[in-house]
Image (cartoon, rainbow, N blue to C red; front, side, top):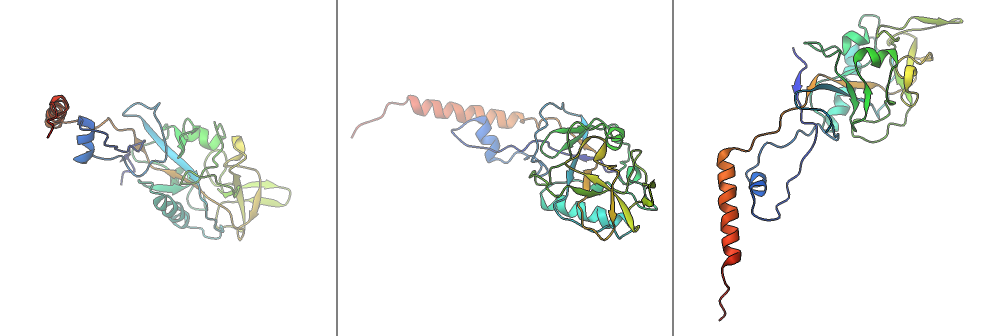
Length: 247
């Protein structure tokens, strides 16, 4: 199934301050912006593909070897924040690598990646894993600050399961006894692959990333609405010009 979704990057509200074509557009309920948008991506042109990323406020242990466990956590948190589309956890296990778990069909590997507040995090999936980040991944799905700091990834800088050994400790993917950590406030090359590990029973956050999103073209106002708006505006002007009659 394709993860591509049409997504409105900015929320708009209507305020009726008089009779105009824009007020009428509000009244007749033109298609509203998606709820999936505490963000502003005004610099992106219509048709641009992109992805969103956040850190969960909730925490979990890393004892499950099933990526669906972690995908469910980030999807639930994204849905609770009003974010649409499909969401995946940036985690690796013994059987599924993070780069595979977050892949889109057709490919979205070259999509730029943004925080839900609008700041660009990485120019592509490759940069996300390699650590060439433009800003730290430290914002939650609802746009507030994510403060936990410790994030389960189980992933190295190529997007595959970690198997790094330091001294007598080997850092593995989720579902193993000792799991690789990322770090949301660290940014840079440490966000996904921090070089640190914790026992899998420890509680930490997750990174969630959206499917492929597309900046839509503005909704056109139909000719009939324009005609109605022009007529209503003309009526309003005529009323203002009519002299009032005293009693």
